[in-house]
Image 1 (cartoon, helix red, strand yellow):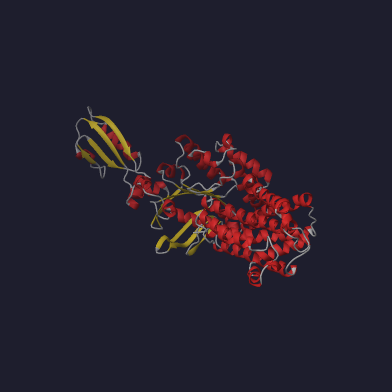
Image 2 (cartoon, chains in turn green, blue; image 1 turned 30 degrees about the vertical axis):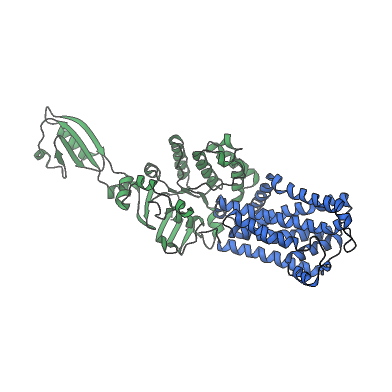
Length: 320
Length: 253
């Protein structure tokens, strides 16, 4: 198997603070990986170690087999990075910003120009091509960062909170674009505060806290592992628990039946058939409560994503 | 493909100072022209010849060196410090660019600006005060070496500084006094022995003296010594900058 990223025994300490603690992670080529974690968990530090903006205290990061420490140019040539904070030069307009970025990745002037036009169109920035970034709205700035990350045709795209501040319609447009890129073979690492984003896009999600990956798996697997999905049926008419003995874990509370299940399937169908067997009994409401990554996140870290969003971020704290 | 990233970095640096030419190029040129007017047409006639040249001709190489020094330093210190402040340096570090490429591109930007600000006053002086330059290739070499030295100092200053105050402090309290006491406006032979020794301890004296030799053909010291000192300073500070980038000083967390 070809790995886009191999991280072995990675630690990063800032004085007495351990930001990354002996972390191991392998990301196969072509995967879409999401990283979720409370602020200060080590997500940004991990990303900084991958892109070469932080020097690991111990351990190694390899990108497509090339060590970020000993072969940085080779390793970086595979990557495109969209950071959490805007880091665009204020002297240049959008088009020139993108063209220069293309040049950094070895694109000739003509190719960089074409690619910049393509990216401006892709991210809806053509009308702003002659503006400087500080005249853009927050959402546009985020799109510019992603466009810039895409300039070098990266095989590994790293997106740190790419949709923060982007409106819903554009967020969904971006999801489509990222899914398309991933289908075409681009490996993507994404950190996000939007659970629905991670759930919709990522093949695997890693939950990170205190510099360690606490859980790693597909959203479905993590939900199965941590959440109890259940079906709730509200009925009208006579009902006796004894007639449901063959449904394990089923409970009755007033006129509401609750049964744990991961999905609608044969068991649910059987239950519905049983409920409609007796004349005069009617199903009033049917509700499938499924677990989600939010619940997984809460169970693993003890915090909700909303709580996390309210706290100052790692980078903000660092800059203060 | 190999040369494109470096070429892009270099163009980016040049584009930056050319785009801001009203701040970066015209003021130093205007200052030099004012010096020529004041010392050439106003005060200059009251000052006796120095080493066989009218006073304005004698100080012209120093004025050119002064322009090159302040502008090459300002170019790299401002460009890199801005890049640190707006975090755009992080984008460059995360891109496949080597430390030498990064340092060399900043320095080359400083050389370009230093050469423009250093050579144009000399060209203007040809019709204005009848200057005859003795050795143009050597003028370019010396101005380029001066630019490397001060561009490198600009990089060191930009990395060390935590605010614009620090950049200005280095300019106001180190570069400016050293430049003015570096023989721009006088020959060391005109100084009392103690002050002559002080001037000889000032590295800028050798830069000005080497350039004066290339422009006028006269110098206080052997031009070979001055040139050797200049080459040592330029290469030493450049390599130190590469080392700072290599260890990621204030660039990599």
